[in-house]
Image 1 (cartoon, rainbow, N blue to C red):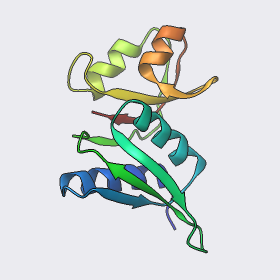
Image 2 (spheres, helix red, strand yellow):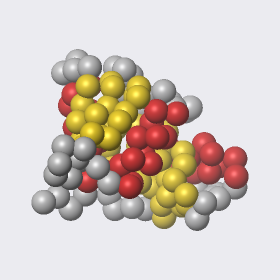
Image 3 (tube, rainbow, N blue to C red):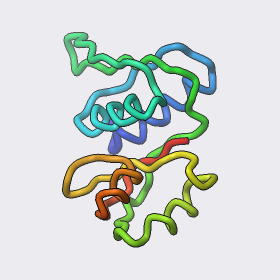
Image 4 (cartoon, helix red, strand yellow):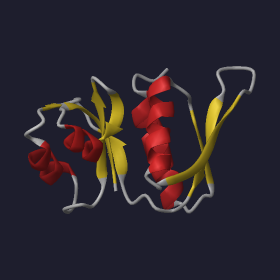
Length: 128
């Protein structure tokens, strides 16, 4: 049993991308589903679907080969609305390159959306 399904899912996506695989299968959770929706909206992954195999099921994800690096942020640091630039410098390789997935009072979103709305949140994951 895993303690962090999101970290496992992102690691699986990254290793399948590096191996050049067209698809990846990850264990489901609500946080994984919402993160996959954001990755799909931002163009990092293709379509994904939930496959019910009679046990707990899994998400089948179409990979596009656009992810260089991704992972969960541990611990889940709290970021104030004035600190986005500071955290982007720590985790992301360049200006306007990559993004954070952030848990905010308004739900899961990217750091770019959080900056535009003028809110802070907790860092969940990064991708570039």
